[in-house]
Length: 64
Image (tube, rainbow, N blue to C red; front, side, top):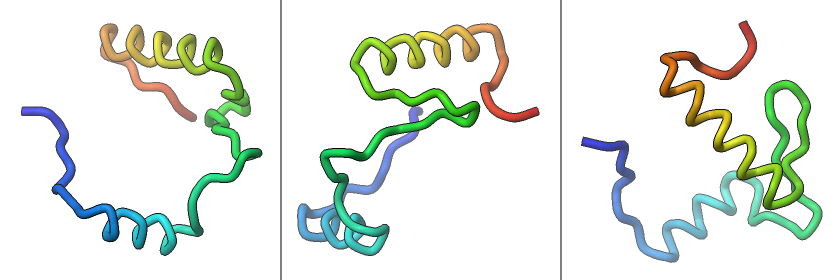
């Protein structure tokens, strides 16, 4: 049983985005806890591979 979110309508989803500060803008970037900016597809894929490796080894990523 995986993590699943309850189904919501498009309107409910948009309301949640608005309540959280609005939709992403063209200059938004994801930043990891250690300060790496995930601003390219390759960087995101590398980070996701790092997460997968950590999970496979039973580790978590993040501050100690």
